[in-house]
Amino acid sequence: MSLPHHPTAIVGAGLGGLVLARVLRVHGVEAAVFDLDASPAARTQGGMLDIHDDSGQPALRAAGLYDAFLAHVHPGGEATRVLDKDARVLLDTPDDGDGGRPEIDRGELRRLLLGSLPEGVIRWGAKVTGARPLGAGRHQVTLDDGTSFTTDLLVGADGAWSRVRPLVSDARPAYTGISFVEAHLPDADVRHPVSAGVVGGGMLFALGAGRGFLAHRESDGGLHVYTAVAAAEEWLDGIDFTDTEAARRAVLEHFDGWDESLRALVADAEGMLVPRRIHALPVGHRWARTPGVTLLGDAAHLMSPFAGEGANLALIDGADLALALVAHPGDTEAALDAYEEKMLARAERSAADSARGGELLFRADAPRGLVDMFTGGLPEVSGSAPSA
Image (cartoon, rainbow, N blue to C red; front, side):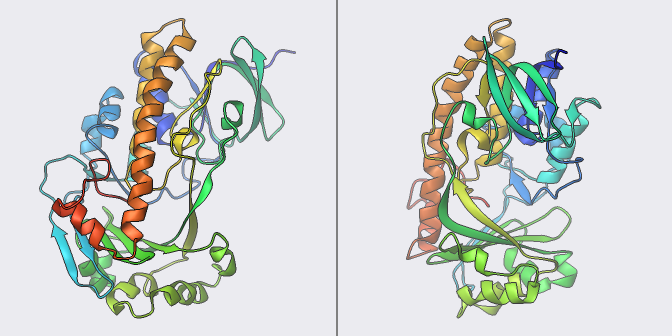
Protein backbone atom coordinates (compact mmCIF):
# COMPACT_ATOMS: atom_id res chain seq x y z
CA MET A 1 0.00 0.00 0.00
CA SER A 2 1.51 3.32 -1.04
CA LEU A 3 1.91 6.16 1.45
CA PRO A 4 0.29 9.58 1.00
CA HIS A 5 2.61 11.86 -0.96
CA HIS A 6 3.08 15.64 -0.72
CA PRO A 7 5.41 17.28 -3.25
CA THR A 8 6.28 19.98 -0.68
CA ALA A 9 5.87 19.34 3.06
CA ILE A 10 6.46 22.05 5.66
CA VAL A 11 6.87 20.94 9.27
CA GLY A 12 5.76 23.74 11.60
CA ALA A 13 3.01 26.37 11.32
CA GLY A 14 4.98 29.18 12.91
CA LEU A 15 5.60 32.48 11.17
CA GLY A 16 8.27 31.15 8.80
CA GLY A 17 6.38 28.06 7.73
CA LEU A 18 3.20 30.05 7.15
CA VAL A 19 4.95 32.70 5.04
CA LEU A 20 6.57 29.96 2.97
CA ALA A 21 3.20 28.32 2.32
CA ARG A 22 1.56 31.67 1.56
CA VAL A 23 4.20 32.94 -0.89
CA LEU A 24 4.23 29.58 -2.67
CA ARG A 25 0.46 29.78 -3.00
CA VAL A 26 0.65 33.33 -4.37
CA HIS A 27 2.75 31.82 -7.18
CA GLY A 28 0.43 28.87 -7.73
CA VAL A 29 2.45 26.25 -5.83
CA GLU A 30 0.70 24.06 -3.27
CA ALA A 31 2.33 22.92 -0.01
CA ALA A 32 1.14 20.86 2.95
CA VAL A 33 1.87 22.15 6.46
CA PHE A 34 2.07 19.84 9.49
CA ASP A 35 1.89 21.21 13.03
CA LEU A 36 1.91 19.45 16.38
CA ASP A 37 -0.66 21.80 17.96
CA ALA A 38 -4.23 20.54 18.06
CA SER A 39 -5.56 23.85 16.71
CA PRO A 40 -4.45 27.44 16.00
CA ALA A 41 -5.60 28.42 19.50
CA ALA A 42 -3.74 25.65 21.35
CA ARG A 43 -1.03 28.00 22.67
CA THR A 44 -0.65 31.68 23.44
CA GLN A 45 1.69 33.36 20.98
CA GLY A 46 3.75 35.69 23.18
CA GLY A 47 3.99 39.46 23.08
CA MET A 48 4.83 42.17 20.56
CA LEU A 49 7.15 41.89 17.56
CA ASP A 50 8.98 44.73 15.82
CA ILE A 51 8.85 43.99 12.09
CA HIS A 52 11.96 45.29 10.33
CA ASP A 53 11.93 47.17 7.05
CA ASP A 54 14.80 45.09 5.64
CA SER A 55 13.47 41.62 6.46
CA GLY A 56 10.03 41.07 7.96
CA GLN A 57 8.33 43.79 5.95
CA PRO A 58 9.64 42.63 2.54
CA ALA A 59 8.49 39.10 3.44
CA LEU A 60 4.97 40.36 4.10
CA ARG A 61 5.04 42.27 0.82
CA ALA A 62 6.00 39.06 -1.01
CA ALA A 63 3.06 37.37 0.71
CA GLY A 64 0.69 40.12 -0.45
CA LEU A 65 -0.16 40.93 3.17
CA TYR A 66 1.71 44.18 3.82
CA ASP A 67 -1.33 46.47 3.78
CA ALA A 68 -3.27 44.09 6.01
CA PHE A 69 -0.28 44.02 8.37
CA LEU A 70 -0.27 47.82 8.62
CA ALA A 71 -3.87 47.76 9.81
CA HIS A 72 -2.74 45.81 12.91
CA VAL A 73 0.33 47.89 13.81
CA HIS A 74 0.44 49.20 17.38
CA PRO A 75 0.69 53.03 17.24
CA GLY A 76 3.49 54.34 19.43
CA GLY A 77 4.99 50.89 19.87
CA GLU A 78 8.47 51.92 18.71
CA ALA A 79 8.98 54.13 21.77
CA THR A 80 11.92 53.00 23.95
CA ARG A 81 12.90 53.71 27.55
CA VAL A 82 16.08 52.70 29.39
CA LEU A 83 16.21 52.78 33.20
CA ASP A 84 18.75 51.75 35.80
CA LYS A 85 18.00 49.65 38.89
CA ASP A 86 16.92 52.76 40.79
CA ALA A 87 14.33 53.54 38.09
CA ARG A 88 16.24 56.59 36.91
CA VAL A 89 15.33 57.30 33.29
CA LEU A 90 18.54 57.37 31.25
CA LEU A 91 16.90 57.37 27.84
CA ASP A 92 13.33 58.04 26.70
CA THR A 93 12.88 57.96 22.94
CA PRO A 94 9.37 58.47 21.53
CA ASP A 95 7.99 56.64 18.51
CA ASP A 96 8.84 59.01 15.64
CA GLY A 97 6.45 57.24 13.30
CA ASP A 98 9.02 56.48 10.60
CA GLY A 99 7.75 52.90 10.28
CA GLY A 100 11.19 51.30 10.35
CA ARG A 101 10.24 48.76 13.03
CA PRO A 102 6.47 48.92 13.62
CA GLU A 103 5.13 46.73 16.41
CA ILE A 104 2.44 44.10 16.03
CA ASP A 105 1.06 41.50 18.40
CA ARG A 106 2.57 38.12 17.49
CA GLY A 107 -0.85 36.49 17.73
CA GLU A 108 -2.36 39.04 15.33
CA LEU A 109 0.41 38.45 12.81
CA ARG A 110 -0.03 34.69 13.01
CA ARG A 111 -3.82 35.02 12.57
CA LEU A 112 -3.22 37.19 9.51
CA LEU A 113 -1.01 34.51 7.98
CA LEU A 114 -3.35 31.68 8.91
CA GLY A 115 -6.27 33.53 7.35
CA SER A 116 -4.36 33.85 4.08
CA LEU A 117 -4.30 30.07 3.58
CA PRO A 118 -7.29 27.96 2.60
CA GLU A 119 -8.73 25.42 5.01
CA GLY A 120 -6.98 22.08 4.80
CA VAL A 121 -3.49 23.36 3.99
CA ILE A 122 -2.48 22.95 7.64
CA ARG A 123 -2.77 19.53 9.26
CA TRP A 124 -3.27 20.28 12.95
CA GLY A 125 -2.38 17.72 15.60
CA ALA A 126 0.26 16.23 13.30
CA LYS A 127 3.39 15.85 15.40
CA VAL A 128 6.42 14.77 13.40
CA THR A 129 8.56 12.23 15.25
CA GLY A 130 11.20 11.61 12.60
CA ALA A 131 12.12 11.44 8.94
CA ARG A 132 14.40 9.31 6.80
CA PRO A 133 15.83 9.71 3.29
CA LEU A 134 14.53 7.45 0.56
CA GLY A 135 17.02 8.53 -2.10
CA ALA A 136 16.87 11.05 -4.96
CA GLY A 137 15.90 13.79 -2.48
CA ARG A 138 12.68 12.09 -1.32
CA HIS A 139 11.92 11.54 2.38
CA GLN A 140 9.52 9.53 4.46
CA VAL A 141 8.12 11.43 7.44
CA THR A 142 6.57 9.68 10.45
CA LEU A 143 3.93 11.17 12.75
CA ASP A 144 3.28 10.29 16.38
CA ASP A 145 0.02 8.53 15.49
CA GLY A 146 2.06 5.97 13.59
CA THR A 147 1.15 7.19 10.11
CA SER A 148 3.69 8.30 7.50
CA PHE A 149 3.86 10.24 4.26
CA THR A 150 6.48 10.87 1.60
CA THR A 151 7.64 14.15 0.12
CA ASP A 152 9.93 15.48 -2.60
CA LEU A 153 10.85 18.57 -0.54
CA LEU A 154 10.91 18.55 3.26
CA VAL A 155 11.22 21.90 5.04
CA GLY A 156 11.96 22.03 8.76
CA ALA A 157 10.22 25.11 10.12
CA ASP A 158 9.70 23.41 13.47
CA GLY A 159 11.66 25.59 15.83
CA ALA A 160 14.43 25.19 18.36
CA TRP A 161 14.10 21.44 18.89
CA SER A 162 13.48 20.61 15.24
CA ARG A 163 12.81 16.99 14.30
CA VAL A 164 13.98 17.74 10.75
CA ARG A 165 17.36 19.28 11.67
CA PRO A 166 19.06 15.89 12.37
CA LEU A 167 18.76 15.11 8.65
CA VAL A 168 21.31 17.84 7.91
CA SER A 169 23.13 18.64 11.17
CA ASP A 170 24.14 17.16 14.53
CA ALA A 171 24.04 20.60 16.20
CA ARG A 172 21.79 21.11 19.21
CA PRO A 173 20.88 24.35 20.97
CA ALA A 174 22.96 25.22 24.03
CA TYR A 175 21.95 27.27 27.06
CA THR A 176 23.15 30.87 26.77
CA GLY A 177 23.45 31.56 30.50
CA ILE A 178 20.31 33.74 30.61
CA SER A 179 16.90 32.64 31.88
CA PHE A 180 13.63 34.51 31.45
CA VAL A 181 10.52 34.52 33.59
CA GLU A 182 7.54 35.94 31.73
CA ALA A 183 4.73 37.86 33.42
CA HIS A 184 1.66 39.78 32.32
CA LEU A 185 -0.14 42.83 33.70
CA PRO A 186 -3.46 43.30 31.87
CA ASP A 187 -5.32 46.60 31.40
CA ALA A 188 -2.29 48.33 32.86
CA ASP A 189 -3.44 51.96 32.76
CA VAL A 190 -6.41 51.10 34.98
CA ARG A 191 -5.22 48.14 37.05
CA HIS A 192 -1.47 48.78 37.20
CA PRO A 193 -0.95 52.53 36.61
CA VAL A 194 2.49 52.68 38.25
CA SER A 195 3.80 49.89 36.06
CA ALA A 196 2.15 51.47 33.02
CA GLY A 197 3.99 54.69 33.73
CA VAL A 198 7.31 52.91 34.15
CA VAL A 199 7.03 51.00 30.87
CA GLY A 200 5.60 53.85 28.81
CA GLY A 201 4.06 53.38 25.39
CA GLY A 202 6.57 50.97 23.86
CA MET A 203 9.61 49.01 25.08
CA LEU A 204 11.31 49.20 28.48
CA PHE A 205 14.83 48.09 29.38
CA ALA A 206 15.51 48.32 33.15
CA LEU A 207 18.95 46.81 33.57
CA GLY A 208 21.68 45.97 36.02
CA ALA A 209 24.65 43.62 36.08
CA GLY A 210 23.47 40.17 35.04
CA ARG A 211 19.76 40.89 35.33
CA GLY A 212 16.97 43.16 34.26
CA PHE A 213 13.36 43.72 33.31
CA LEU A 214 12.49 43.87 29.62
CA ALA A 215 8.88 44.84 29.05
CA HIS A 216 6.60 46.20 26.37
CA ARG A 217 3.10 47.55 26.09
CA GLU A 218 0.77 45.37 24.08
CA SER A 219 -1.89 46.60 21.69
CA ASP A 220 -4.66 45.65 24.16
CA GLY A 221 -3.17 47.87 26.87
CA GLY A 222 -1.51 45.08 28.82
CA LEU A 223 2.18 44.85 29.74
CA HIS A 224 4.28 41.82 28.82
CA VAL A 225 7.31 41.47 31.08
CA TYR A 226 10.45 39.38 30.63
CA THR A 227 12.47 39.15 33.83
CA ALA A 228 16.02 38.20 32.82
CA VAL A 229 18.59 36.63 35.14
CA ALA A 230 22.09 35.39 34.36
CA ALA A 231 21.92 32.05 36.16
CA ALA A 232 22.94 28.42 36.02
CA GLU A 233 20.84 26.29 33.69
CA GLU A 234 19.23 24.48 36.62
CA TRP A 235 18.11 27.68 38.42
CA LEU A 236 14.54 27.50 37.14
CA ASP A 237 14.27 23.85 38.18
CA GLY A 238 14.45 24.94 41.82
CA ILE A 239 11.34 27.13 41.53
CA ASP A 240 7.81 25.74 41.85
CA PHE A 241 5.94 27.75 39.22
CA THR A 242 2.64 26.11 40.20
CA ASP A 243 2.92 28.19 43.40
CA THR A 244 2.81 31.68 41.91
CA GLU A 245 3.50 33.54 45.16
CA ALA A 246 6.52 31.40 45.97
CA ALA A 247 7.74 31.83 42.39
CA ARG A 248 7.45 35.61 42.67
CA ARG A 249 9.55 35.59 45.82
CA ALA A 250 12.19 33.36 44.26
CA VAL A 251 12.51 35.61 41.22
CA LEU A 252 12.49 38.86 43.16
CA GLU A 253 15.29 37.63 45.44
CA HIS A 254 17.54 38.47 42.49
CA PHE A 255 16.29 42.06 42.55
CA ASP A 256 16.86 43.00 46.20
CA GLY A 257 17.62 46.71 46.38
CA TRP A 258 15.94 47.50 43.06
CA ASP A 259 13.33 50.24 42.98
CA GLU A 260 9.89 49.04 44.04
CA SER A 261 8.30 50.37 40.85
CA LEU A 262 10.45 47.90 38.91
CA ARG A 263 9.93 44.99 41.29
CA ALA A 264 6.18 45.57 40.87
CA LEU A 265 6.44 44.34 37.29
CA VAL A 266 6.66 40.87 38.81
CA ALA A 267 5.13 41.43 42.25
CA ASP A 268 1.85 42.72 40.78
CA ALA A 269 1.66 40.47 37.72
CA GLU A 270 -1.55 38.54 37.19
CA GLY A 271 -1.70 34.86 36.37
CA MET A 272 1.09 32.33 36.44
CA LEU A 273 4.72 33.18 35.78
CA VAL A 274 6.24 31.33 32.84
CA PRO A 275 9.90 30.14 32.94
CA ARG A 276 12.01 30.11 29.77
CA ARG A 277 15.67 29.25 29.33
CA ILE A 278 17.34 31.08 26.46
CA HIS A 279 19.09 28.67 24.08
CA ALA A 280 21.01 29.23 20.87
CA LEU A 281 22.65 27.25 18.10
CA PRO A 282 26.33 28.01 17.43
CA VAL A 283 26.97 31.27 15.62
CA GLY A 284 27.58 30.38 11.99
CA HIS A 285 25.69 27.08 12.15
CA ARG A 286 25.88 25.51 8.67
CA TRP A 287 25.45 22.16 7.00
CA ALA A 288 26.37 20.43 3.77
CA ARG A 289 23.75 20.62 1.04
CA THR A 290 21.45 17.67 1.64
CA PRO A 291 19.15 16.70 -1.24
CA GLY A 292 15.45 17.37 -0.77
CA VAL A 293 15.57 18.96 2.68
CA THR A 294 16.26 22.37 4.22
CA LEU A 295 15.55 24.42 7.34
CA LEU A 296 14.28 27.90 8.13
CA GLY A 297 13.82 30.11 11.18
CA ASP A 298 14.83 28.78 14.59
CA ALA A 299 15.30 25.28 13.18
CA ALA A 300 18.16 26.68 11.09
CA HIS A 301 19.63 29.41 13.28
CA LEU A 302 18.15 29.62 16.78
CA MET A 303 19.64 32.65 18.51
CA SER A 304 19.05 34.71 21.64
CA PRO A 305 16.43 37.48 21.33
CA PHE A 306 18.86 40.31 22.04
CA ALA A 307 18.98 41.76 18.53
CA GLY A 308 15.26 41.40 17.83
CA GLU A 309 15.93 39.27 14.75
CA GLY A 310 14.32 35.86 15.32
CA ALA A 311 10.80 36.45 14.00
CA ASN A 312 12.06 38.70 11.22
CA LEU A 313 14.52 36.09 10.01
CA ALA A 314 11.83 33.41 10.04
CA LEU A 315 9.61 35.62 7.89
CA ILE A 316 12.29 36.49 5.34
CA ASP A 317 13.58 32.89 5.30
CA GLY A 318 10.11 31.67 4.36
CA ALA A 319 9.68 34.28 1.64
CA ASP A 320 13.19 33.77 0.22
CA LEU A 321 12.81 30.00 0.08
CA ALA A 322 9.48 30.29 -1.73
CA LEU A 323 10.86 32.79 -4.23
CA ALA A 324 13.93 30.61 -4.87
CA LEU A 325 11.70 27.61 -5.60
CA VAL A 326 9.59 29.71 -7.96
CA ALA A 327 12.72 31.02 -9.70
CA HIS A 328 14.04 27.48 -10.31
CA PRO A 329 11.04 25.48 -11.53
CA GLY A 330 11.85 21.80 -11.76
CA ASP A 331 15.29 22.21 -10.13
CA THR A 332 14.78 21.98 -6.39
CA GLU A 333 18.48 21.56 -5.65
CA ALA A 334 19.40 24.78 -7.46
CA ALA A 335 16.67 26.56 -5.51
CA LEU A 336 17.91 25.19 -2.18
CA ASP A 337 21.51 26.11 -3.03
CA ALA A 338 20.51 29.70 -3.77
CA TYR A 339 18.31 29.95 -0.69
CA GLU A 340 20.79 28.45 1.78
CA GLU A 341 23.72 30.55 0.56
CA LYS A 342 21.75 33.73 1.24
CA MET A 343 20.01 32.57 4.40
CA LEU A 344 23.06 31.15 6.18
CA ALA A 345 25.20 34.24 5.61
CA ARG A 346 22.41 36.50 6.89
CA ALA A 347 21.78 34.27 9.90
CA GLU A 348 25.46 34.23 10.88
CA ARG A 349 25.54 38.04 11.01
CA SER A 350 22.36 38.21 13.06
CA ALA A 351 23.42 35.46 15.47
CA ALA A 352 26.68 37.25 16.16
CA ASP A 353 24.76 40.47 16.77
CA SER A 354 22.38 38.66 19.11
CA ALA A 355 25.24 37.23 21.15
CA ARG A 356 26.85 40.67 21.41
CA GLY A 357 23.48 42.14 22.38
CA GLY A 358 23.18 39.78 25.32
CA GLU A 359 26.63 40.75 26.53
CA LEU A 360 25.78 44.44 26.13
CA LEU A 361 22.51 44.30 28.05
CA PHE A 362 23.78 42.45 31.11
CA ARG A 363 27.41 43.48 31.45
CA ALA A 364 28.78 44.83 34.73
CA ASP A 365 28.03 48.48 33.99
CA ALA A 366 24.51 47.89 32.61
CA PRO A 367 22.60 49.79 31.34
CA ARG A 368 25.47 52.05 30.27
CA GLY A 369 26.30 50.01 27.17
CA LEU A 370 22.74 50.11 25.85
CA VAL A 371 22.46 53.86 26.43
CA ASP A 372 25.75 54.38 24.60
CA MET A 373 24.48 52.30 21.69
CA PHE A 374 21.28 54.29 21.38
CA THR A 375 23.07 57.63 21.68
CA GLY A 376 25.84 56.82 19.23
CA GLY A 377 28.62 55.86 21.62
CA LEU A 378 28.60 52.26 20.33
CA PRO A 379 27.70 50.73 16.96
CA GLU A 380 24.13 49.47 16.84
CA VAL A 381 23.43 45.76 17.03
CA SER A 382 22.05 44.67 13.65
CA GLY A 383 20.73 48.15 13.02
CA SER A 384 18.06 47.86 15.69
CA ALA A 385 17.48 47.81 19.40
CA PRO A 386 17.74 44.50 21.20
CA SER A 387 14.24 43.18 21.71
CA ALA A 388 12.71 40.49 23.89
